[in-house]
Length: 174
Image (cartoon, rainbow, N blue to C red; front, side, top):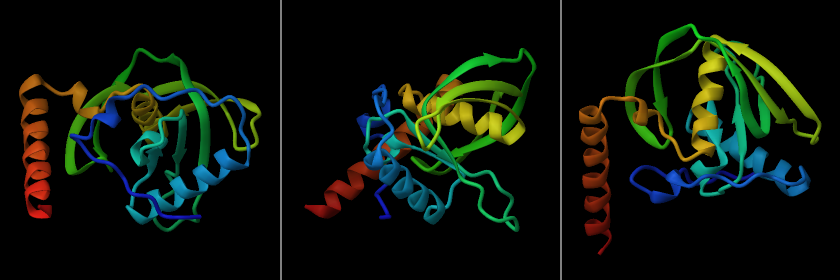
C-alpha cells in the first residue's frame, strides 16, 4: 500500500468521466488499497480513484464511527439503480475541496449495483450517511462535484477561492 496525492480543484481532471473497469485484478485491488490508505490518512470517509488522478470507476468508503473498527467497502463500476423520492439535507465536504463544507440535499435511500473487491456483481441498499457518501463518490466518477449542487453564486465563490490559491502556489514555486 502507498499513500497517493489527492488532487484538488481547480484541477481539470476532477471533471473527467472515469472509465469502466473491465476486470477486477490485482492491479485494481492494489489501487483500492492505496486509495484506502490515502483516504484514512486524509482523513475522509470516501474516495474515488479520480481524486488520486486515476480516471477509473473505483470507489472506497468507510463510514464506521470513530470508536468502531474500520469497515472498508470497495465499489468497482458503481451505478445508482434506484433512489427514493424523499430527500434530506446533509453537510458534505470533499477531500478534493479541503476545508469547505456545505449543505446538499440528496435522496435518503439508494440502491447501487457494483463489482466487489473480488469482481463479483453485488447490489447494496443504503440509507443515511452511506447513501449520501455513495452518491457523492459516484458523482466523482461522472465528473460531478458536490459544489455543483450549490447555487451559482456559492459555487463560483468557492471555485475562485481555490483558483486563487492554486495561482499563489504556482507563483511560490517559480
